[in-house]
Image 1: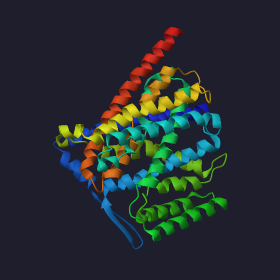
Image 2: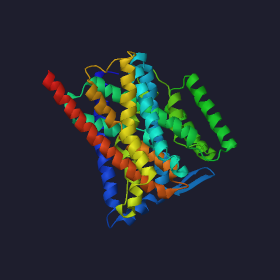
Image 3: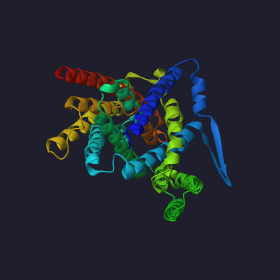
Image 4: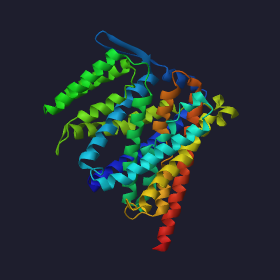
Length: 390
């Protein structure tokens, strides 16, 4: 990845993070205004999708969470494939530190959440909610701190977030499934085989891949596996070559749409926490406390702790021109879970225990706010200390 490409990526993600913050704030304001009924009506707006004799009738909220977010996962898959083939994750040394840090940043929050909810069987199902980091918000805060942020620290956060997203995708695939339909699961496998044949045959037209991707989404939806996984599976088979490849064209075409519309719209549709629905018991509930503890304390302990161990054991070194305090500041920023945490919380509780969504939103919003503020303050302190020493 060239320096120009990295700067463009960071600039885009920073802008997306600011828009994301504004749309989430707008959702909270609207949900607590006299026009909250219109917000709920928008969430429940009926939509209908037809493909031949196949018909799907659902709500706009379902369409956003299960349809538009598939494009979000498609973009993640495309970025992941490109980074492994020609980008920052191509060399083992560049992969090891953020990979291990991401692993710690998933394991420790999940364990903390599970401990808090151990005697609460329903709440325990949400153990995956605090494992995710919102790259848009985290990079937005880093970018607002200006040129003082070392490039090595930014690359570390970018790579960590990619591994973090992969972990979330695996969790969705393995644990967020409904009763499986063997017939549609078989159809899904057949479509994946067809995508593989297209790739092996050297087909570089995007349309056949996208058409099969749509069919795969429909089959996964009917199979009981969460349909957003179709985006990641499709990305693995989009051809990649040095110049003007289908993967690069599709990634470029999706980036602005995902960053400026899909993710902010998802936040707007899911972040509308009504304060009228909140009671003292919600703030003290184990689900809320588990999310706050997992994201705010677990993320920093996992990311920084695993990184510290790897560096002290001399398997890797600190990112270029980065101090320990700066690394800890980024570990704090990793506690901003927002988009993916809300998504995982929705998948966990929406169908069987929708009353828990208030606790999920409350926990994610509080933890993300604490992590963002604490991370920004810590990084400011770290930059001042570096300037004094210089």
